[in-house]
Image 1 (tube, rainbow, N blue to C red):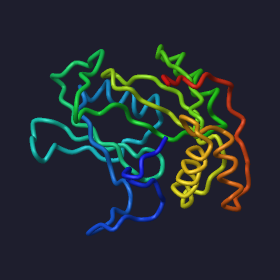
Image 2: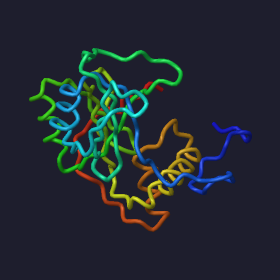
Image 3: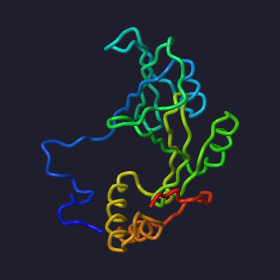
Image 4: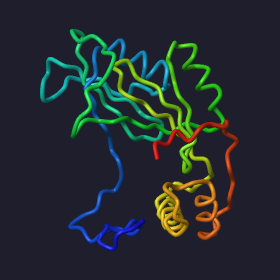
Length: 204
C-alpha cells in the first residue's frame, strides 16, 4: 500500500527553514453581518470578539469570532451581500471548516441544529466523530469530537502512530483498533467517549 518514495507520515518536525507554532486564524468570505452572526455566534456559540473595517477594503466589515480555544475565525462581510446556498469547489477553494465540540454535548448539538432548521449528517470517521452541516453561505461546517481522550500536545503523535499501525494492518483508513493500539503503544489510557453509532461515510 505504500511507496518508498512517498513522504513519510510522522509527528517529528521536518527539516525546514522554520516551523509554524499553531493555527492563529482562518478567514472566509461571508455574506452580511446579520446572517453571519446568527450562525456563528447565536447557533455555534462563538463569541464575537472584534469588529472593525477590513483594512484592505474598508467598505467591508471584518468580524472576529473566538472558536473556543482562543483560535480565531474571521469573516469579511458586507450588508449588500445576501447569503448563498452553496460553494463553488475548485483548486484553492475551502472544502470545509472543522470546529471541535464537547462529546458530552453531542446530542444537544444535533437537537439545536434541528431546532434551527439546519440539516446535518453524522459520521464515525474512525479517528474522530463528526457532525456535518452548512453555514448561511452553504460552506460545509464540521463539528468534530475525538472518539478517545487524547492530550492536546500528544494528538499528532497519536495520529502518526495510528497511521503506521493501519499501514502495517493493510487497512484503507485508520479505525478504532488502530487508535486504541496507538494509545496503548504510547502509554496513554484508552478512554473512549460515549458517542452515537454512525456510518463511516467512506467512499473506499
